[in-house]
Image (cartoon, rainbow, N blue to C red; front, side):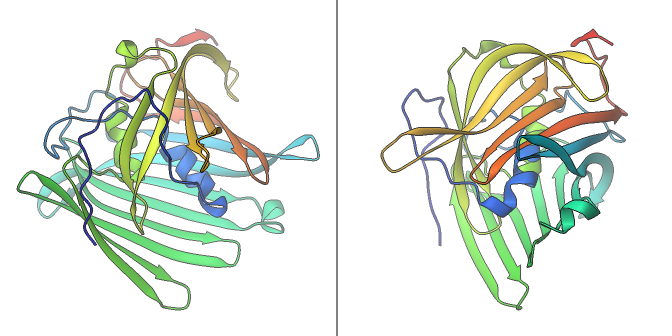
Length: 292
């Protein structure tokens, strides 16, 4: 199926955001750190001013169990140079693994891979997800012609069944990791507290509208005992009556690296958090550090 949507805009009115599925929360919340819409007829190119090849970020994952926070796993985000169809590109990998103790309740082995040009234009996305008893592989391939962005998506399930779709938009369609890469290079200083931001994203089965709200600036202490000055964003969804529900709160360093320090997840089955554990290979000085 093919769907055309309006040009992106920063909106002040409520819209219905796609609901986050219970078993897909961990990769989505790390990948959707914050996002800003790009303008132009499906022009996805952007200047990379935030990261370089060799960056490696580690997170510790926690879940609230009977009012006690328990460590349930680790996640890593790595960026390296590669080639795609004989052209220089970036390969970004996100890996999320639950601990052996957590596997007893819910096993998670998720691997996300995104290939994008050096101008951060999406080319290929893959997500392999083993979550509980479910295993799926999602793929998305992006192309651009006549001022439109096209994405061919395929989902393969554990039983071998396949679902394929094609959608188009006159805006850029992002995958979970390309939106992260582009957003890290934008300057959020022009945004005002309470401002809503929308963008389309390929999920493996469809293209969904996402909504974020800018909340302001706050000092946050990470698991590495370092305090950072952070930008705060919230991913929200709306019910059929238009009532807003906050799903995830992001704390991102207020410097040119724009690294996520902490993520708070407000889930249907409890609360979860992801904390920055370590980072190496970052591109710019960490000017957001308040104390160390």
